[in-house]
Length: 133
Image 1 (cartoon, one colour):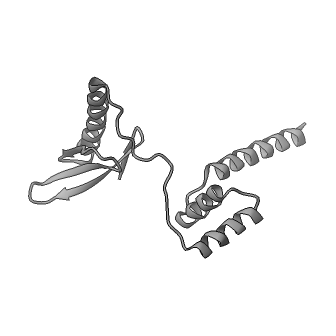
Image 2 (cartoon, one colour):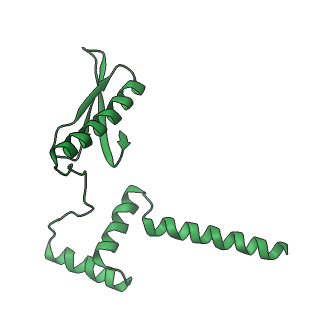
């Protein structure tokens, strides 16, 4: 997987052509690239994204963005009620609660957890400074 300007691409080896072939994922438009080495494939990916963005700008059309941050899912009403109750019990919105559970399942820190780590580091540094004085 490669990432550039918010776009993500998958790269596969084409053994017959002895080339790495890639495609930008998560958009309706088709954006592909290829290279003989990983470095060439990455450079081609970046060039393809830049070309795509330029093409859209020249046409006066907004480029397709990979993800909006929103998705709709259908649940059994009992499950919906249960997770809504759990979110309320934790003082969180349903969206925040679900996002945290998904991030935990993927072992990805949420933006809130990243802020907490920064806050803790800041507090630790200030405590160390005051003890040294």
